[in-house]
Structure formats: C-alpha cells, structure tokens
Length: 338
Image (tube, rainbow, N blue to C red; front, side, top):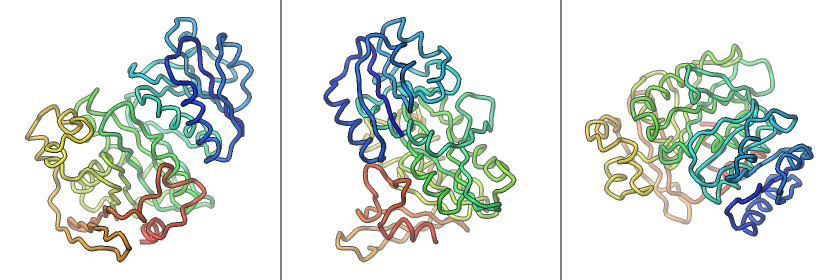
C-alpha cells in the first residue's frame, strides 16, 4: 500500500516534523509513503493512487475540495491540526481535527487501517456520532463480541479510530469487534455520552447475526475505561468481562489532579451530582503480577462483572498498542484468553 500525505497551501506546521512523524508510521505499518506540498491541492488529490491524508489549510478553494466527490474521496482522511469542530466532507472521506501535530500520526494510521482492514459502519441512533464499526472474524460464527470504547479525555477531537488496531487484532483472534463512537460531553453533555454508551452496548448483540450476545467483553481505554466500568455497573448481567485499560476510574481524584487540563470538570460541567453518579461501587484487591517493576494490578468486581487496570509496563504495548499483527507480550494474550 502507498500513502500520500498532501500538505495544502498556507498550512501552518513544521514540515520537517510532519515528515518525521509520517515516516515513522509508514515504517511501523509496513507501507510506502511520502509527504509532499501541493499548491494545487485538487491536482494532487486526483493523482493520488493509494490512501490519502490531506491537510487542506485555511484557503477557501482548498477547503471546498473537502466536500468535492472524486475517486480519492473514499481513500481520504482530511486533517486540520487545529480545532475547527466537525467539518463536512465528501461521502466516504473522514475528517480529523484539533489533535495538533500528533494528528499526522493518527491520520496515517486511520488511512491505512480503514483500507487494509475494512469495517462495516452501522448506526445505532440518528445522530451523526451514534455509530459503531463492526469487524467480523473468519468463519460463520457465532462469535463472542468485543465492544471497544475509546478514550481521549471525553473530548470530541478524539474518536473511535484510536481503537482501530485493537479492533483489528481482536477480529483476527476470533472476536466480533464492535468499535463504538459516541457523542462526547464537550459538545453534547454528559447525559448524552452515557446514554450513547448504553445504547451502543445494547446494540452490539444484534449488530450481526453472526455474533453471540451471551459472550460480550467490554474494553475501554483511559476515559473510555471509566465509561466501560460505569456502563457495566449500570447494566448488571449484560457484560461478561470488563477490561479497563488505564481507565480514569477515580473521577474525584482525577478532578483534584486536574488531569488532561481539567478534563473531568470539563466533561461533567462542574456537576458534583453527576460526578458522584459516575462512580460504581466495587470491591478491589491489588497485587503485583510478579514482574520486575513491582507494578500494581487492580482486580475489581461488582456483581458478576470484573475489570482490570494495571501500572505494569509489560501490560502496555506502547505508542502503537496493540499492533494489528499481534503483540508478543504475555498480558494481552492472557487477558484475551481469560
């Protein structure tokens, strides 16, 4: 596969850093690619043959191309480094915004993953952000369901693409991976977020005839870990296992530390009642897994639902966690088999 990162006119960015970040992703994903500046963005898009990451910049002619149809459209991820809010794009294209220079990294990953490992996008509600992407394993099923909730400090600049690699990995391991998008509280309020997670979780079992709703595992990372634990506590018996990956589970402490530049307060809009309601009641026991780092694993249980969080470096696959080709560490396969 080939990836073209096309930088439009008047884009404000360190192009050397753009090239460095893109090159690291090309190597990590095993694809060919190049970064090039384009004074004529339309011509550059027409000549692109593979996946495309396009930085349109501020000029009106370039931004009009975001909604223009063409052969490139289903292969294009549009990237605004600054926060612009959602922008309209042509059918099949996507838009990322507000992730600053690191948006290059995530846009390249998304551009490659969506072409190399296509998913079926299914709406579970009428809003533009109420959808999930389903990846089915080989075979006829029925397959256990893995529901994925992305993190990003509950902010709309981050989306379900953060969990692409994990969804791909789970599908290759025999799971029906349901990667859930939901309305974030910075634009829609906390109640909309929790309602969407509950609705998306309930929909997972009927997303396809080849899924087995009686075997449902819920994964959540960071802010998504908190949402996953909360959703499982609110729906006893609906989930077999919850895996919280570095979940922000103690929101009172998170608020005290002002994590994510005040992410907890921003998500809850200062609503102390909402803060109290987000904390499930659990029983916890903590121990080291026996590694050389002296980590702490937390095994938490509320009724029939269990979840895990860890500070162990062996349980953290790193910047590209977990790669679509699988991860060689012991904790991830052990979690899957459990």
